[in-house]
Image (cartoon, rainbow, N blue to C red; front, side, top):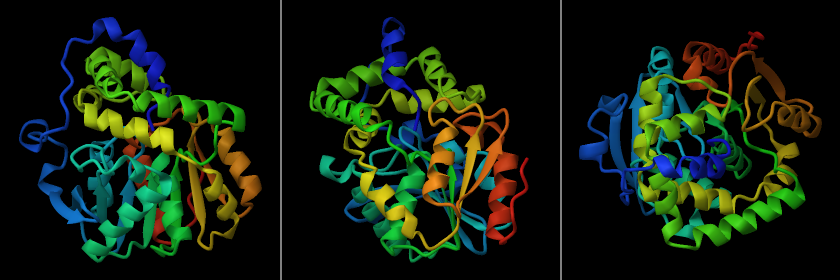
Length: 314
């Protein structure tokens, strides 16, 4: 999930000069996509998925957050692939995966869609790791019995609502906005500039390299990608997940960037009060996109968890 997008996008409206197009095109936008040689396209659950697979051995499933895509794992995946098989899809409507019907861009709908993908690929991940909203999708899948990993890793996991009054207002406003057909195009037009994308990413508390910023900007200029992210946020309801989380039967590890401005580290501590067995590892100096800032550290923590070892506090 990319931080407080509307404000930053509005601030950059005057800078936007690229016309928003509907959907990313693999021949054009994927020509130099990170880890392109690991990409494949799979049909499952009525969607055409862009999926990246590399490595060998036990399977680790990675799910990115809202408004991101597989490029988010560009430096992490090769490190993990030295030891395990890594599977990372573009979520529905994101990147190069086709857009589902709007009513499927809910937490349960996304969980069902990813479940259909894992079934089509016939994979049983031993470990799952999700960034931001991706962690919520994975936890929903585990609670629903769709997958049975040894553990779940939430990387700056977006699992707590903003607060009932605030969340209700935001959801209502977001639903009104995404119901207007020009809104995703307007947001995409504003965010397509490199400087605006850089500002959006900086607002998360992370500093990533120029290539990473350029890849986000490439996706942000497409109305389908931006529209799917907006609809996800408008339809996101975490109350059922929070109600069910105390019944989670597998270990939960929360990796929290100390500089995260999108998901405050205090949310992990609140979640731990709900689930005392959940473990928290703080990541000093890192923000919401910690896996892009320091992929070696995140790879080490994931591999230790995959091997059943206790991750040390960095």
